[in-house]
Image (cartoon, rainbow, N blue to C red):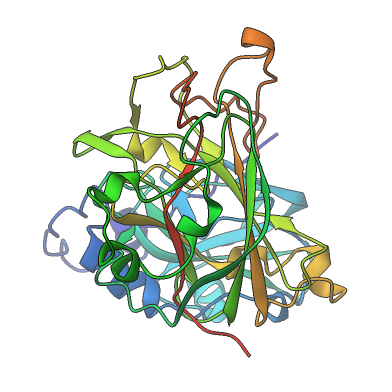
Length: 361
């Protein structure tokens, strides 16, 4: 039997004999706006492999946790979800521990999930920010002109042209800062990109490596077009990183869309997490290296999160299996990823630039 563990709210206070009703609290915002997100996310101590003193694992790698999402544990255990603290003794004091093999969260904001084997004292600790969605066009993003970047992609390592590609094929246009490119004789910033083609890829190198600091560590910029706060013409891409240029680790991803998209169609920006391309021109998708902290490649030294020098972007055709001879691509939970299909000419993901936000060694 699966037990779902929810945040204990006012009902718990009443159960221990609270003398009077608590003051009504204003409702939590539906999602974090950019400033609210940065205040909560940037100031939140990062999780790391060193946090885990118990073998129980949380089978979800993202730092942003959608409300109500059922997250599985690696084994049957005791779990407690606590807001506003990383002190496991609070779970003991308030008797939040419950037998579970999964948990979910029903209130937005930073929270900590404590997990332990029954009868053991060693505790695994996982920190999340619970959000109602993954962020609309203007949420959970950064603008290229205001990004506090410490470096930009400086070298093209490999460019593999995908299908249906006949234009915008200069990979050098993905190098350098946004402002540097835009100061040159470019008639329109939307054209200052390199297209990957359907299923193509681009591997870039940062002279200043990305490091695992507080909050997002790098951002990837595309030239999507927005038709509303939550609607964007998007050509999506998987994002992978490497320290040595040989072993790459892919970021986990979620795609909630369940229907195909026409070649000029749009997707809901808040339906995608962990994929580049769901933000409009000038705005970047944020990535946090801390999401990779528990990977085997980090533990055995193949990936140094404080010396990430290589970024690989792999276009996702965004179609159902067998459409026009293309294979479907899947997110980390086995869902087919849909985006505008099929695009031709400047086909596939259009890479504009890639910024390092937290520098490494």
